[in-house]
Image (cartoon, chains in turn yellow, orange):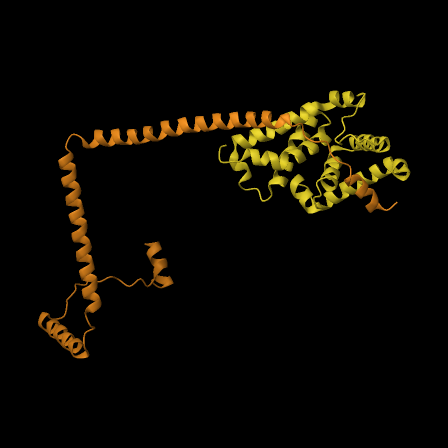
Length: 168
Length: 149
């Protein structure tokens, strides 16, 4: 496979990239297209990863850039479509417990309301377990910006989910 | 509500798993691109290198083919000339390095010979016309007369 083990890369990183992209795009088809674009790009230019210090951070950066490009391309038409969408695509697995399911659905809605920049940082911090330094490196933003985006995003989530969280 | 608890609660929410069928589809698409890329590079590599060598070979053959022995002889003569040149330069440098400075007696002897030679030849008599005039400006009064004349 052109000197680059794409199968290994897929097995190690695709799951995380899928969740990250789905959280940003909120669209299964777009997520699939972006994920495929990333692996096609790697197959076309195997040297891309050669200079990367951290594979995961590099792939997250690729995914983030691709998602932001897509969100910009979609523009206002897609925003309007999203606003009127009957069902929000959740990045979370379904829960058997109804309360948990409600919490997850509300969390998905609350995340969807965050700006994409804050959502990306919140996702990487909470579900990828990256440090602010790693997030700053992956998203190519200053460390303080990463920290502040996380704080703002988390405050909004907390505010939105407080009643449900206190119930649980 | 502690912020840490809330964060931990969020962290515990499991993310959706990637559809299993995507693996084959995405890797196949990527592999096709990789294979096409390698094929194009291979074709370019095979085509470009022999072309480059054959062009160089053809041009050199055109240049040297009419009289290859004459070109070889000329090259040999140049190599011989360069070799002789280098060997002579090396020897002169070695001789200059090896020779010792003249002794005071030799210097005194040389000076005596120069003096004798000067006495035999006599002093050099230069004519007035050949002598260069001193570049001293004339007095101001004389300059005024010269202008008047």
